[in-house]
Length: 123
Image (cartoon, rainbow, N blue to C red):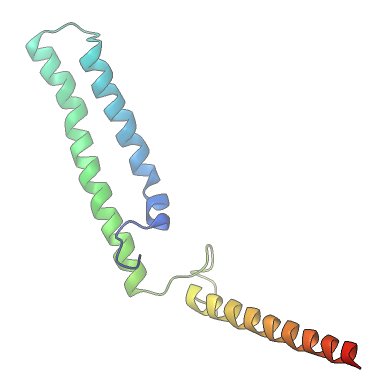
């Protein structure tokens, strides 16, 4: 999973580009199935050109943006949402390490209290 270019977070960031791609694709199909302005070759070519060219450029932009977002997450520290400009903010890795340490401590405390309860029951 670490080798994926477009993980869940990256896809969520790219949603602002993916939704217009679907909208443009819908209109290409709709105009191909139901020609609203007739089937005149020049008019149809201009109509589909005005849809296809932005679609291609937006698809390229979306792909490059996804690679840039994923690459930046590997190079630079990642902060929790809204914490990138806050002084002394903990990175996402530090936050996860603290959460894992707290969880391990809670499990150890539960094990110790369970052992004490079983010792008391034996007596």
